[in-house]
Image (tube, rainbow, N blue to C red; front, side):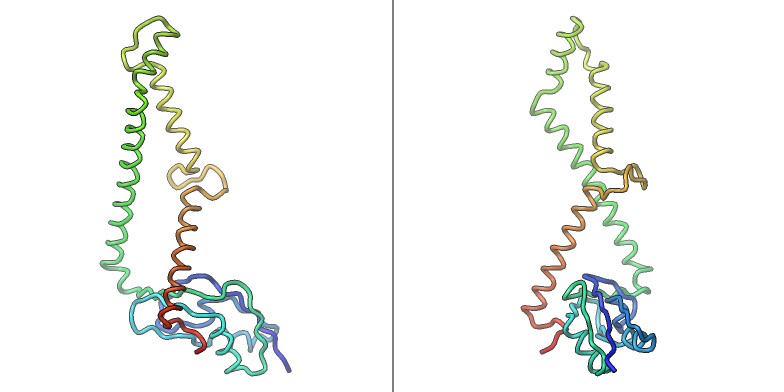
Length: 209
């Protein structure tokens, strides 16, 4: 009797165990619960060191059919999955501190880099002189450099940044993805493609030889 096994593979995952099972890299469905549980528990790869490994869908299919010859695998999702082993013991030590330092450093660069860019732009267009001329043209008085025009512009710049990035602290202004989330997702996708191609060229991908 043929058993149909539906497998939807992820593009990238993190695991905390050295043994990578099918349930770690893919969602599995089969009408027979025993077959489904057996397929989920099949070991695809065992890590020997901390690294990123690429497991192909062909390898997954071959492992399923080797253990369950009567199963017909119907694949969905990605053709390759990048698996990274994260040791829980190491994450409590230096890795956690290093991660916090990276977040702080990136936040510092983004904050002061963005502020410097805005100031450089304002200096290029001589915004102080422009505001002074506009204020004198409208009111007939000489601007002291700190008027309602500068205050409203600064507040408008702040509101514009918040609306554009769709973030106020941990809260989002809408349910749509923020520009940073979109950029990060594109970056992750490009990185995943580069890792898969590199492993493929090196011949170190977990695949059918």
